[in-house]
Length: 188
Length: 192
Image (cartoon, rainbow over the protein chains, first blue to last red):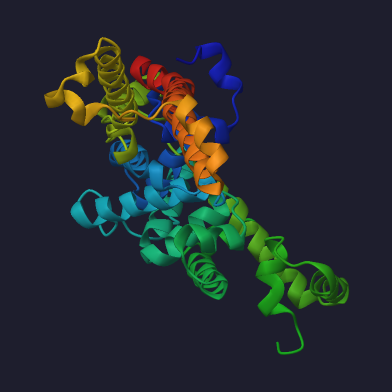
């Protein structure tokens, strides 16, 4: 048994090793450490917080099931993100209606004068723009822009070549610049 | 834009260029307003994307973690651990067999000593059948054949005494080795 006070200080690798041996408390600590990032990734992919939390929980349960096969030479974060992204993709395929991005206009520069309303509208437009990207480009963009992963880490996470990472990122940024141009021009 | 560094600009912005490539782009940016503007656009896009936050989660961190833990199924015990009892069982079995053989042989020896082997119907289990050490020593005088018989007698006596001891010792060592190696794992897994 692990004492709660000592588990916090443990390195990821040690927790992973314990969790691989079936220690659920150690895995619980890993969940606590990565919860926010995993929910963030899934939310950016599907655009719905409730779905994101449910999918993140399922992703962690899958991670637990697959943990005995995890090889520590690969970064745990990338491994976990891959499971989370796969789960997000499953959710999107299973629940297109919840993640429907067609019901709001993509660009709405003529929002009311209130600053808060404008900010909310901007957030919504950014969210919609990201959700409108193809899944493959969206996942690369999320891992780069929101998670700060290097190209190599993204390639490892998604099991794609480095060149594909670069081309998908270039495509995603190009589309976003086009769609979000009213706000990008405002910032000049 | 062929002379520009637009192709490498994104990688440069993302900090993915190193060494001479990184230097080349940095040098180019010092003099090229067009590429500088492109770099600024990339920076603005990133800044804009960061403005859209992830909404607050519905579930508190502890509740989320608890819900995940409730869904975790105990993993299948690996095959080698499922049959972990086979090793000590085999060792205990081997020990029991050796002890049984030893007891039977001692019983036969006692019976022999009591004269049971002298009876014609029991003569089959008297191993030496009239051959004693004294007779063998006397046989030495008759040459190398006598010496061979003596050597054979001594080695078989030594083997019959030492072999059970060596086997029983080996079994003990293997058993306690298993105990030391496996018990901590089993206790730990049992507490989980």
